[in-house]
Image 1 (cartoon, rainbow, N blue to C red):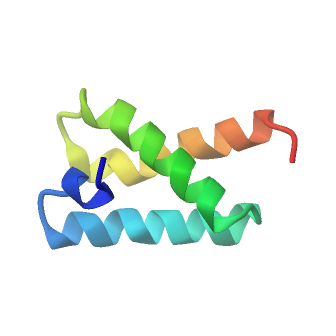
Image 2 (cartoon, helix red, strand yellow; image 1 turned 45 degrees about the vertical axis):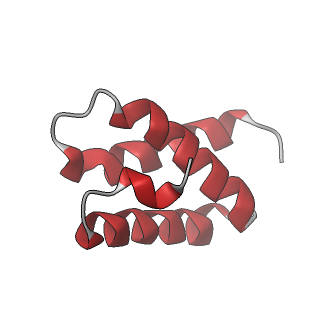
Length: 72
């Protein structure tokens, strides 16, 4: 699925891209890995989300939890 299809508007796209960039800087894992995990979690959470403004925060938290349980 095209990542841009998740966004309802440009502001949402920017929020998610900022969240991805922050994760990359904080966890020190490859861009591809963080991006892949982020969009997998987004795909899961987006189905149930009622208030989408909180998605970047919730997704980032989940991605960090996944990374903490995986070996590098």
